[in-house]
Length: 333
Image (cartoon, rainbow, N blue to C red; front, side, top):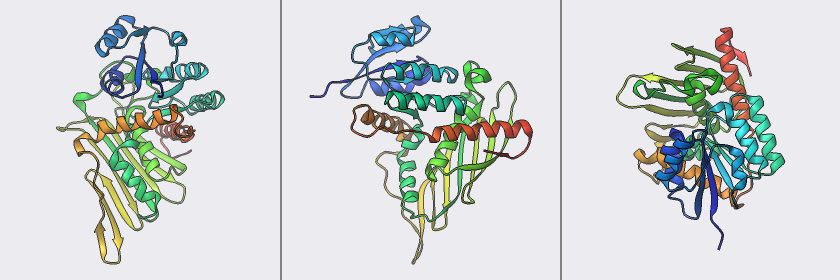
């Protein structure tokens, strides 16, 4: 019988408490060996809540754990690189919360470190693992929607839930504002659905009330003549958040909100929306479970290690967005 996979959680903040630890504690054949956080008392409280024995303040202390296989990094963005590389050099697989880092150069160093260590480095883009998004990706990849020429991705979060303080409001820690928080996910999902084409040019506009932007609109020209549009905000004043993706092709179209797929057949425009394996209300939570299943298959060696070089290009696009706003012009990537 295969032994349990042993995982440590680095960073005891909200995403660790609300997302990763509840999922990990329910997974079979998996042991959460430790929580690492500079605030030891906080880490101890969270560890006791989830029945985790090990508590450390330094990432280097993980070397003392026998049989540790992997970590999930849930720290502020500015320390993703140092934590990931330290773990990779210890021979650990790494799942890193998005964005992979704050710059494309940093992301490249992290990927090179993973290559040198022959370990999986994966960024936690859970939106890719939504059942509706994966169904649309299959339609695009199979060519059933024809040539994709336009993708729109929007993530509009309610003002009541916006980060009011903390590291997400500090440019030197987060790398930016809502574009680094929601925008990297919205851009990644749009490009992933389209097969991750190269972005050639970007034009971006921000709304900024404080140090970092709270709303962003980005228009991207992609190779082959297509267009990607992205809108994100922390300032929506509605009763619920709004998240949607639209994909337009020469032979059909698809959307996530509502989830629909339509194709142009000989008999006319026909809806071919497949059934989902989960209720719409459970899509977001299920995406995290699928993300962990995908990562753990690589930790166990059941699937070949994947090099996520597209994350370098993603951060090049984000850097071009900030340059576009600063220079008030369209910027080449």
